[in-house]
Length: 353
Image (cartoon, rainbow, N blue to C red):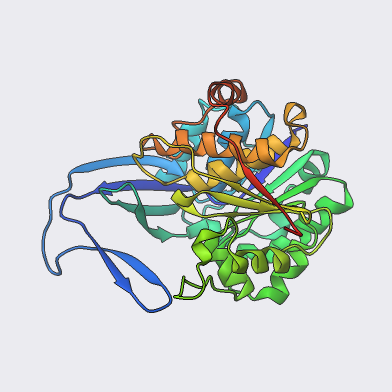
């Protein structure tokens, strides 16, 4: 029996870094957007190049295993050179692949990742088999036997299995962690609400939360200084809309600005754990899966504050390496870092404050 089952994407990732890349900021009255740009029509030299295995299903399965859990992975691949690379990668990992789906008629997911000099990245993704997971291909027995089901963002038609697997997990008392992705969010809040209502932990980044709730964070004005508040009032509105059931914990991440959580009684803010940044790829997967793992670990005792700190530390370790899984820490190392940095903690605000 696997303690944790993950379902998500699996890709072969090609990292490309080019010194000729520019970061261009475009600002409007109510928001700003950054773009990575290259001279149009130019041929540029690549300054760094690497190939790694990635995808939410892969990254989180490796993390859960590294944290000490017996882990089963569910993802879909083709029968090609990229799937061979994926299986070779897992040969050295303690992850059960019995539930992996392989389709000879499909292609394995593939991504080109353009990395900036600041460590952020733009991803060009070919979804391949990741977008074609069918209900008949899911190992529901593994989900039934698991303590926790972690759902990483799914692509394309694979989102059609979400309703069935979440309902099945809840019917069989399997704890559900749901990391919502943009494909499912674009289906509308009416669709998403049914899944949110059954998830014990929901994790989104700020942009996804804004898209899901149709709530935008207002910028400071001459009369209102939202940035001076611990929790932006519009972020609170997002939490209230996303929290469908009383037992849920909602987490919204905000990149280098940290992460927030809400349990219906308190708001929590955890700043980013400072450290070197080589690449931000995999940071979100590491944060979300570590938070869910910590919340189910006895020594954390369902402590949201400690779980946020643990997640931030592990996420910080991941971004210090070029690979999405290379820097992952185990719980002993995370706790050691927590003990050495007692000043690093979350800030809380009660609902009525």
